[in-house]
Amino acid sequence: MTKAFLGTTAAIAMIAFGGAALAQATHPDTGEALSENQSFSYRLLDQFPTLDPQLIEETAGGHVARQMFEGLLTQNADGTLRPGMATEWSSDDNQTWTFTLRDANWSNGDPVTANDFVYAWRRAADPATASEYAWYVELSQIVNAAEIIAGEMDPSELGVRAIDDHTLEVTLNNPLPYFPQMTVHYTFMPTHQATVEQYGADWTDPENIVVNGAYILDEIAVNEFFHLAKNPNYYGADDVIIEEITGYVINDSSQALARFQAGEFDMMDSLPPATYPRLEAETPDVAHSVPRLCSYYYVINQSESGNPALQDVRVRQALSYAVNRNVITDQVLQEGQAPAYSFTHWATAGFELPTIDYSTWTQEERMARAAELIEEAGYGPDNPLELDLIYNTSEAHRQVAAVLQQMWRPIGIEVTLSNYEWQSYLELRGNQNFDLARGGWCADYNEASTFLDLLTSNNSNNDGKFMNEEYDALLAEAATSSDPQPLYTQAEQILADEAAIVPIYHYTQTFVLDPTIRNWPFDNAENNWYVRDIYRVADGS
Image 1 (cartoon, rainbow, N blue to C red):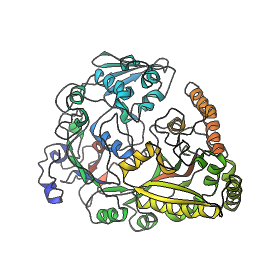
Image 2: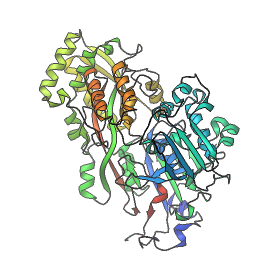
Image 3: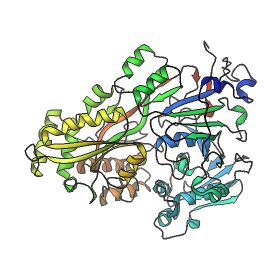
Image 4: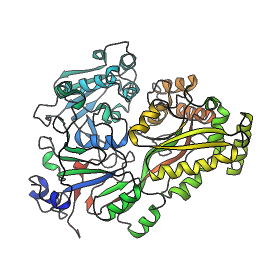
């Protein structure tokens, strides 16, 4: 159930602010003059399917969950770890981790305890939950996670226990020095057991939801907007300056940009293609471009439901070789993206990329080899291979797909473009009802396995169903290795040799931001932002 949303600047101004925002005329640390309007609003490209932390599988929902729920650890503006519900964490062997929880309450007044994390993590691994991120629990190496996800053990056997209300112990199969980084992810955020059990699938509705983060959902209209209000029971509420958050779902990027420029909201990314250079030149204090750990690629359906030709490595290689990535990055998008020949983003901490042979060829050489391969596979301009490509609603996705459609045509691959709204697109891709599909993957933590594990055989997000025993073995070995980087390099080489996917480009984060919004985390390469840390200054400050 939703409530009517006033939705105008005048209506926002009518809200009674009683917290830190208006209790002081200046920021307590910087001395900047604060605006009386301590609201933050932004544009979403797509409607998030859920706000249940254990069911979220995409970025849009993750951004909202980050405002409403708080895990053991969170991040500073530069992406370094920061205490969340846990004030201390330690391990003598990187295999048994202990987290000490602070005194904190849920939005209904109940205390947040270690058992709330035990419940949430068991729930994420439980096959009955059907979490698309159950694989993430297994990836974290928690004891018995793999067996629970496979239905071979009860969720109560997961290697996580509450020693007492304020002490959580996590036992891993193998040492994992970056495990604390993994706890930042929304899958590991706590959920309020009594609320989930009372309301079932409706527990995240505004009238039911119980949260432990800085904001709480109070209004939502699907495919239109959502509204969050400051949570007075949040342990750090006195330091939270922004009082409310509004997100507007606008699929059309050009319309969204026009509305941003009219002052309707404060931030938007996914800008219209080729607009960033102009925006940067005209409004350098508004337009921003920063590195972002995301990769844009095309999924190739190698399961039985896809076109049988896609099980031929020569066809997959031809698809990849024929893509002129520089045209897409330099002429279509123009936002500083880097052409991609690997899946893992070049800026990932410690990652060593192999030299992918065809990345050193000219585009003419790539096209010539692509034509040879597709002919060897029995296709060509006189006997075209017909494929269907699905993508979710976005002008940028449409333009990239249209350009690739033209690039593939000369070698005898005819592609039909099919556009779907976000939820339908996810369902089609997840059920292998496609030949080719737009894909985008953003790091869940800053380590190469966050990309590479996606393409292991048992990963539920491996929508193309790429299967390779050697690749799986390398990733399994990497999970227990003291120096996994050489193994990651070998794994990337397999992806290139097998053309498991078609890498297109590595992201930058280009966006526009109202200059009165301050303390934005420009240096967080994972694009994790927390509205609790930002504030709005008075005009002219």
